[in-house]
Image 1 (spheres, rainbow, N blue to C red):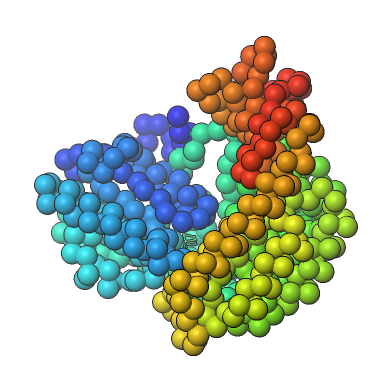
Image 2 (spheres, protein in one colour):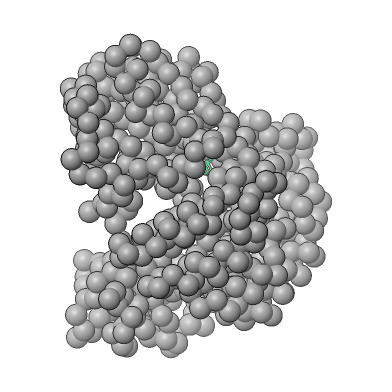
Length: 469
Ligand code: SAH
Ligand code: SF4
Ligand code: F3S
């Protein structure tokens, strides 16, 4: 069951959207990153506050909402397929409304309304709060509308939201990105970096913990730059923010993403090593192991600076699990450049990596660079990279067989095993033996009996003393 926050039951107004449309239901499909998933919690909250009920398929919905991603072309192509479905459903019932929210709405702008006549409303990531008004305008005045603010002073974290159930929750600490990596559309669709006041973040985390949440993931495109934008008046370093949040009683685990290597501060290295609730896991996107490509990507660090940073992180925190993002076949990437990426993967001993084939994006500087890598070469490099990453993951996980790992229970599988993650973000399935299945949020010790590149399996050794109290 979902939990409603800041939408008091019974506060649905007369004249709400539910009273205005034939079918008072909505279907919400999310593409893209965790920030977008979190934005969907807000879209859900906004529509629930209008008396609308979420349904599982577009066929049952009066309003069809796609919360979209434009980070790679494939995500947009998938959206077009879904919009085809929406068009067919609208042909069956003209009263149905179709909404495109999120990054594609922002990137394509009003041109999308022209190209897709069955789309009724566009709402960009900085304008989510406008959705109910735009839907009302569509119903009452028959106007197809768009809200596409480039940045917003209303911190969208403060909108009503319906968050996913369970012991884990996301908390947004920043919006936007000002890095302009040459391949990336995010700064164009999410606007400039704006940090949220530490006091607001603390209140939200306290509320969530009171509500039974035990693990928080702080979200931002570049959390390491928290508080650094000119004019921000608050805690000046992300590491300090972690220490302040760690003091909240009842919070068992604190995670964050994403970290930009150029902005990792000594305070962050220290918090990762010493702060008890901060998980010993760092997602540190490298993107490439080649200096030439890193420069063309405008990442702001060299390979040796990145490797040096990894060395300092590991020296401070030997247990640290490191994961990364890598792009292959960037414009002009040679075989030597690609070999540099493979050797970086070996040198940094990543637990795992998200791997992507470069996709030219509108608005971005790299889209105009020469040196397109052929599709076949891109595929071959991708396969080679995935094979190496999986080989390393399997090898590192196999070393854990026989060890005891602490997990936080997130759910129960049909076969009676429980699943959860280690602090280092490894997925673990654990048999309970004779012990009763504990509630989500319980911390358990598990003896690992087998491992693949993606998961660990084991048996619970001790029912956690740290169960939700
Ligand atoms: N703010 C985060 C994540 C950005 S998007 C960060 O900077 O790490 C997530 C990942 O998508 C990026 O790390 C990058 O590896 C990948 N990505 C972004 N734009 C891309 C593009 N045009 N083509 C292929 N991969 C891309
Ligand atoms: Fe994109 Fe770079 Fe910003 Fe990450 S840091 S969102 S890759 S521009
Ligand atoms: Fe996220 Fe995709 Fe937008 S990765 S920020 S939903 S472009």
